[in-house]
Each structure stands twice: as C-alpha cells, then as structure tokens.
Amino acid sequence: MKSTNAVEKNTQITPDFPNKRNYLKRMKKSLPLYVLLLPTLILLICFTYIPMYGIIMAFKDYSPALGIWNSPWVGMKHFIQYFHSYQFGLTLKNTLYISLYSLFVGFPLPIALAILCNQMRIGMFKKFFQVTTYLPHFISTMVMCGMILIFLSPSTGLIANILSIFGMEMPNLLSKPTLFSSVYVWSDVWQHLGWDSIIFLAALSAIDPTYYEAATMDGASRLQKIIHIDLPLIMPTAMILLILRAGSLLSVGFEKVLLLQNPLNLTGSEVISTYVYKVGMQNFQYSLSTAIGLFNTVVNVIILLLVNWLSKKLTKTSLL
Amino acid sequence: MEGTLIQKFNKKSQKKKSWNDRLFDIAVYTTAILMILMIVYPLWFIIIASFSNPTDVTNGNVWFWPKEWKVDGYIELFKQEIIWKSYLNTIIYTVVGTIIALIVNIPAGYALSRADLFGKKWLSIFILIPMFVSGGLVPTYLVIKGFGLLDTFWVMVLPFAVSSFNIIIARTFFKNSIPDTLWEAAQIDGCGTIRYFLTIVLPLSKAILAVIGLWTAVGIWNSWFNALIYISNEDLQPLQLVLRRILISNESLLGTASGELASELRRLSEMMKYAAIVVSTAPIMCLYPFLQKYFNQGVMVGSIKE
Image (tube, rainbow over the protein chains, first blue to last red):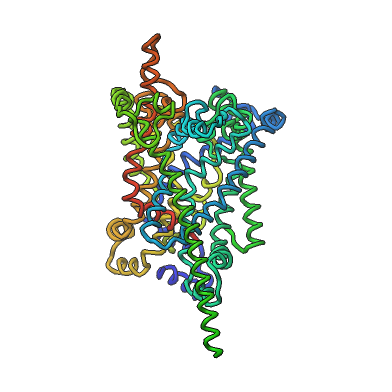
C-alpha cells in the first residue's frame, strides 16, 4: 500500500517522469506475487486457454491427420448443419424447458425454507433440521441417480410399494419423455433444497433486529414481518443468485441427465450438453460437437449479460 | 376508567396474538418434521435394504427394520477386487488432488488480494474468464491428449485443479481478515513477500484452507465424468465409475450364470447395489456433521464476494 502511494506522489511532483520505468519498477516490486500466481496461470493457459484456441475447429473440417491449424476452413457449415438438424429444436427445447422448470421450482423454494428455518426458536431443533436438510447435498450424482432408479422402479421400487398399499399403480416415470423433467427437477429439490438455503439464511441473520422490534411495537404479526421485512431485505442476495443461475441457463446438470437417460425417454431428456458429448466422444464428429458447444457458450454469455443488465436497471443489483 | 379500557384492550389483543403465534409455530414445526422425515427415510431405507433379503425389499416387506439380517451383499461386494482397487484410487485422487488444488488456488487468491499487485485488474479478468467461457469438451480432450495425459494418474488431479471460484473466495478471505498493517510491519522487519505468505499468512488462514480443501475433496470423491472421458484403463478407474456399472448399467460384477444359479446371482447383485451405495457414501456422510462448520463457512465466505 505504502509503496504505491509513494510512487504516485513521485509522479505528481515530476509530471514528466517517464512512465515506462515506473511500470517496470512496480512490476519488479510485484515479482514475488507473480511467483505465487505462476502455477495457476500455467495450468489455466494449458488446460483452459489453449483449448479455447481449439474452438476454431468449429469453423473447420477437423481431421486428426492434419491437426487443428492445417484442417480446411469451412465457415459456418457445422453450425448450419446443426441448426437444420432435427436435434436442434429438440435439444434446445429440452434444455430450456428443464432449466426454466428448475429455475421456477428451485429458486423460490430455498428462500421459503430459509424463512421457515429462521422462524424456529428451539435452537437444538433448528440445528438438527439444518444438518439433516444439508445432508443429501453430499451424495454423489452417481449414487443419487442410482437411488432414483431404485426408488422409481415401477414394479419393485419403494414408491411403487407405498402406492400399492393405497391400491394405486406406479407408472414407469423414467420411460415417459414428458415426465423426465419432473423427475430431474424434484429429485434435485430433494437433494439440494437445504443446501441452497444456507446463503439466504445468512442474509436473514444479518437483518438488524430493531426492524422486528419496531414491527412488534406496531402490532405486526409474524407473517407480516416475513412479508414486509424478511423478503425485501434478502432480495439483493436473491437477485445475485438469480443472475448467476440465469448465466448457466443452457447448461443443465449434464451429469445427472446423462445418467438418467435411456432410449425410451430420450425425446424428453436429450439436452445440448449431452448431445455435444455424444456427437463428440461417441460419434467422433469433433468439429460439429465443438460448434454446438460454442453455440451453447455464446448463448449462455449473452443471457448472463442480458439478465445482469436487466437487474441493474430494475433493482440496482449487478454482478459485473 | 379510560386507562383500564386500554389495558383490557391490550390484554385481549395480546391473547389473540399469542394464539396466532402458537398456530404459526405449529405450522412451522409440522412442516419441518415432515421435511426431515422425507429426507431421512429414503436414506434409512437404503441402509436397511442393504442388510435385508432383496425379495423382502422388492415385495414391500421391509419398511423400518430388516426382516432378517443379511450381510451377503457386503461380503460379495468386498470379494470384488475392483471395488478395493477403485476405492484406493479414489482415495489417492482425493488426497493428491486436494493438495494440488490448495497449492494452486490459495497462493493465487492471496496474490490477487494484495493492493500493490501490478496488473491486478488484468490478472483478475484472466482468472475469471474461465468461469463463463471454456473451450468445450472436444478441444479440451484434444489438448489433454496432446499433452500425453490420457490414461495417466495426472489427468485426474492436475488439469482441472484451478477453480476460479475458489480463488475468489480465498481472495475475499485474505482481503477481509489479514490486515494490511501486518504486511507493512513484516516489510519493516525485512521479511519478503513469499516468506511472509508462508510463515505469517498461511497459519492465520486455516479456516479458508479447511473450507477449500474440504470442498475440493468432496468434489473429487464424487466426480466421474473426467474419468469416463480420460481414463480407459481399469486399474486407474475411480470408485464412482465402478458404481456406474453396478447402479446405472445394472451390470453384475459377479458375471453371468444360468438356471438356478442365475436367480441367486440376481439376488446377490440386487443386494450389492444397496451395499455399494452405503459403502461409497458412508465416509462423507459420517464426517460431514463434524465438519459442518467448515462447509457452511465456505458458502458464507463466498456470499460476501462484493
């Protein structure tokens, strides 16, 4: 801190001081910090930025024999091929549907849970409630999908057995394309609801207690306090999280979708990212797969910027 | 006269309020208990099912307690060499991967937290971009192949060790909890940046080390997709990929048989499913309540990022 101030003072006294030497001096001062950053930068360059260069494959006909640089340019051919294919409408529709569905369900529920938790007055119970609701978050996607398959099994699963007590029959949820999104979203709610509420709980605990006291004096009921104090005050946190979620609108929880997919529900479960995986790693159409992936990234960034801009206008909260 | 009227009114409204409050409390706790049951019961069911006869489970005879205790599932599971091998692999990947992640993310977070870092803005942007843009699946695959990392130990711990998010969390932590005056004092005593970081900052930052370390460890323990793409050698497979064969592909590790043996095999495979879930998830589930403090801190530290 001090040293930069000194340098700035210096430039003020002698305005014609050559800027270049100044930079060099400051760079030299930061040298040990660059050393600390070095491993990170090397890894980022090797495994994130060099692959970004590989994006040009999307505009070429990549062949392994020629390498990325020497493969012939084909312009937008792969994008056009994707946009004209049957899979385009299907994957786009499924991706948007599943992510909007999980946004509308998965966004308000954690807020509700945090408010519920905040109303509990028995400390021990509250703690127990938190530990239990956070617990499923640590189950791996693989095990979670295994559990879904076991529980939803139409003839022998737990839910089928429960329903049979009431004389009802269990439909095979995972073989119906239209029901896939519900299975995906609600199992996600079961797994992550508690965890996602932590951040709102923190925001709630930061609220100044005098607000509640004043409200009590005015005779507000607990429900009124929730509506007029809790909700408006956690809105900024909620907006930031909403922006972040919107930025990944086109990247649905890829691993889970891939694991729950089967030939029967494919028309309801094929999303862009699983399609990218299949085209690239199973059919080896490298250029096409990269083009679809690039399309996905570009749309994500555009949505992120758009929502960020909108939120800045409407609520004065923004990420960037 | 007037005073008593107001008192009466107050008493009445208070009584009404406390009734309202009580109803409200009942609603809150009923919802909470229902939610706890909905979360605990499926987990409990998996555990009892792993100790039960599969036919009892599928016929709906097991609800709260195993009808007869069976441990065949566990015995058969532990007889499989691949379970042990992949379990060991996962442990090694988790330990080494977590150490590498700490080495890569913590110092970077510290460097970015320093106000006198020259070029801080550009370096921050350079580190932030990967949060939103990436090369995508195929280009990354080709680069890793180009480095000759396919089917090696290192592909599981090195390429994806950098986490922009964790760097930001670390940066926020250092900014908020390590005072600038400390660095000025160290400087006067002739302490260099790196020595200062290693001997003074790190010992003061155990909380952030724990948070990021635990998060990375859980992430690696649960990950499988990188292994699916980059590892084809069975000796290097992590546990989650073996679980995929058991749980998702419905493959029996016991092989195939015909006739009477076939149904016995099916029975055992069914038990092994439940046992595999318990065995793979138990370590995290048992450790979590004790480490909860650190896990929650991670979310908090992340939330104050500007």
